[in-house]
Length: 299
Image (cartoon, rainbow, N blue to C red):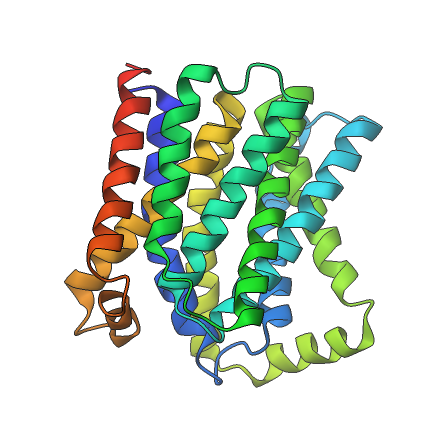
């Protein structure tokens, strides 16, 4: 199997575990608090790579790389905010597939315009299968503003991953990864410029328990590992395919729901509802079929 494809698949498994923990965090009042607070800490912690980066090997960025990295960082912050805003009022098994499908469509459209050869005509059908399967998994039975949040999050995630790919086309992986993560710190800091958000962020950090903080940090370390794997996959392969493979995350989520429903009640609802039968089965089948086609064309 192509290395970047294996990295992308492995990352989605780790992301699925992280999403379950995220859902647990955002629905507990004693944890971090409002979505803007969580978006701040996620963005801030994603920039911690600057602490361990080999500074002697990091080259000075061009103005274009800085602009792309800033755009990627702010799009990522916005995507995180709308994702967790949706998760506060809707199930992860409903919100996450919509975000994934919209993100894949967004990156596919933008990549076809900005990146020559990112995806060939032979690979469009499996990407469509992955996106369609992802969309089918969600029931779309949630409140209007939750759907709005999911759509906005998906668009911004698509823009974010496309901007990251453009950065990697301008420089090597180490430099690109370093500067995109550095700009995440700047994007997080920008949230403090809004008085209401600054108050919420400062209060959220003070009022959350040490256990909640440890849970968030541990989960972000886990997500960070998946993020590095995804970044490597994006730098090495097709951004459209890597993003479309996000559908695998939701296949893993539903397997987790059946395996751990009794131990993790928050996943139990993923097993019920009008989409719990043929719609979910069809969605999973389309994702598996799309992945199989991509695999056969990359071995």
